[in-house]
Length: 321
Image 1: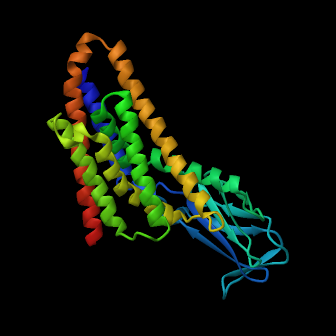
Image 2: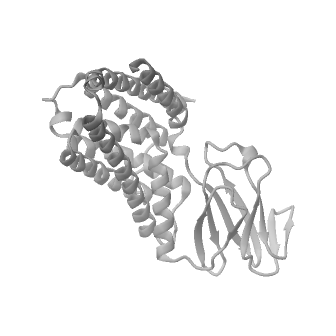
Image 3: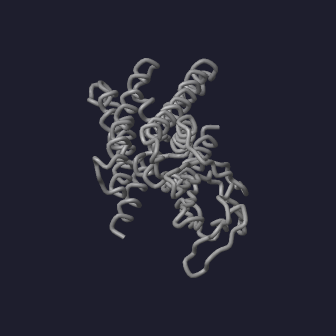
């Protein structure tokens, strides 16, 4: 039984490894509609890193429009009501973020499910709409950011009980909220590749601390302090993802607030799930299983450490490439 569980754990971490090396590429597909001249529009697509160029949609504006090949401008008799997307080589799993800007100063952004074929272009951008959209982006980003999730898992194992876990995760949240805001507003500039490499190193560090199990060390005695410090680092990674997406220029504060709240909500869901599984295993697991849990835990931590070290090397090589 324990051998089967180890095998399943290895497969799961291997699958996570393929995705987590691109953790910050689990971003929405971004389409920008810009009115360059009176009734003349340009359409631009930015694909996340995990979507191949062959899966880029063909874009068209809904209305009496025609393209001008030389200038790549689409001319419409009236303001277009919607964006049309045609998928020729499969539909990527990424959500779609559409940003529009018009010559009269109006701008808006909206999100749509993956594979959408028609997305309405609203004339105005509401505060609630911005908050809701960026909240959803924040939730998606943390729940598909496998490196951040492994870091959180290590934090939960170090904190141990509910109260210490709540304080520790709050420290992590405060840390990354600060650097998300500073970096997104341009007050802090760092090399994104270097940040991603050091984030991987932070996971390896926590895994090593758990393996050593030195309860009198700084990490175990003051996990909230350690989490806050690493939160500053992880916030730079979140900010890099947010900069790729772009923020709503008319509602900068709400964009940042929505994204931060979304990340926090995703964290709480993950932490609650981990603590629930731990509590269930202690309550319902057989004595034989509990006796073997230490070996399984050691195997899991070793796998996390090796995986994080691999990400660190891979991302470090990516900086030099």
